Image 1: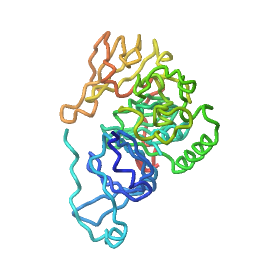
Image 2: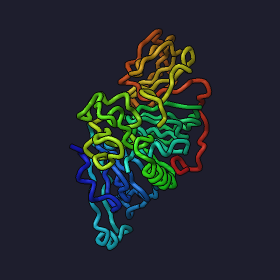
Image 3: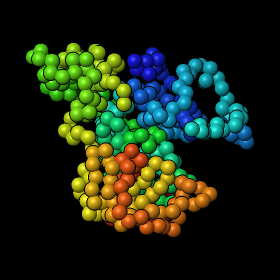
Length: 98
Length: 149
Length: 99
């Protein structure tokens, strides 16, 4: 019944969230509920740009409302650690249009 | 851990709330409910572009307009404390699974755990389930129980 | 359990006082709260709407229009705050959101 059922096995792992406003937030999934509201601990936002490398903003402890979540992804920590974010260039995501 | 339990634990703490329209509100959480409606005190409102600011003594924000909430890091540790304390309580002493007339088998309303949804209000927020299986029944709790909303 | 049911905020204390209401879609009104219900439907007297920028409907301007006695539909109410003590201020943060 719960829409978040698939999130159970991601608890205490790092996840990557893309929000409806086009932000990419990574953090440790500490909890969630039926509405896919999620708790992210030690979260940080990755800001993408075509001009410079990826900026990481420290956000801390977040509750993100399910309404505002587009995608929740598992993070391969090993692969992620091997990325050189300062060399990564990407277009920022556009917000979801309702 | 349920997002709403964390939010409830954050009562009295400062927090930042961003609304779907991009405005942010910094203030101390006074109260919240299972719809994530919140009441903040000593609030500073920042416009979407971050160029205008307002001070307001308090404000009420409807849950469904919230994009996210940023709460102080230490709050997450307090949730665990409260939870473990509640676990140690004898069944029926509040906190989890207040079975409301099911302890004595009368069943009362909502044998299916669906019932009315509304008037248990916050109890639902903290226990997740609708007390199906009565006191101490925290296993069935956080998942199947609470219906939608 | 904070024994409150429906409402997080007791609107009783705002009755006959000025409140500011933001509605979904971006409208913003102030008025004297005359009544309310648990669904957050509000009755505002001498309501004034802050008109918005034609280019950016999320921004309000100084232009207003008088609406008189109105009912705000609860489902559209996004935010309620008292007008008393609400003021525009200079940037209180070193850096917005950075606090």
